[in-house]
Structure formats: structure tokens, C-alpha cells
Length: 130
Image (tube, rainbow, N blue to C red; front, side, top):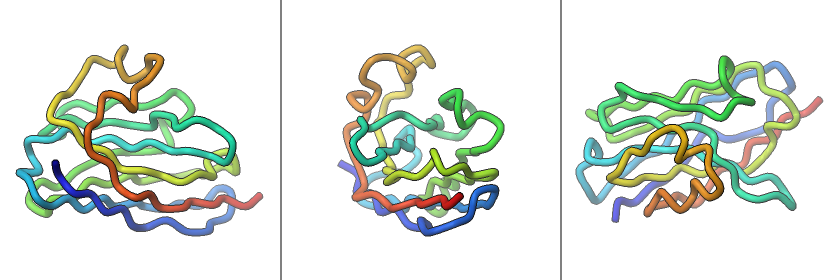
């Protein structure tokens, strides 16, 4: 499995921006689709965004479309999540995930998208104050 380490979380006011990074090691990074999930206190982990192996395809949950952008730099073995216009409801622990397969959008919006990823990071806290 690929090893993943997230960074870039923090405290930001509503309307502000943060960029999360996910550094990968241990396997060929370009062989993996990369995803971001988040989990708020007392809630289930939810899908945020996914990007295909070379970045040609992306998919987002509806609530972050137009505000968040997922990207990757295969030369740096790193995936990113640029988060703009942050809202208090975006407060959560954000997790990076990886899998060698890239599924259809319907799969990521289905009942258990976390099951589509085999490798996970430890998470980074994002807190948005009102």
C-alpha cells in the first residue's frame, strides 16, 4: 500500500481559504487515484473529491463544487485540496485516500465511497470559525 501524510489544516475564518496537501510514498504515485474525505464530530466520514491517475478527471460532492479544487503533481508525489470560501459546516478532519482504481461518479456518490479506497492518511483538522 501507498503511505499518505496530510498537512495544511488549521483554523480559518468563514470565507477564508486553506490548501491541504497529501504526500505519498512507497508506491508509484501515478498509479493511484487520489481522494479527499472529511469527518465532522458525530458524523460519518463523507466523500469530498477525487482525481484520476493523471488528473484528467475529477469529481466533487455537490456542497463543495465551485469552492474546492482537487489537483495533483505526480512529479512531487503529492495531491492537493484547495478550499476557498470556507464555511463553518466545512469544519472536520480531512483525510487523504488512494486506490489504484478510478470509479464512475455514481460510485463516489453512492452509499459507501470510503470502501473504494484502500490506503488512508491520518487526517488533518480544518476548523472554520463564523
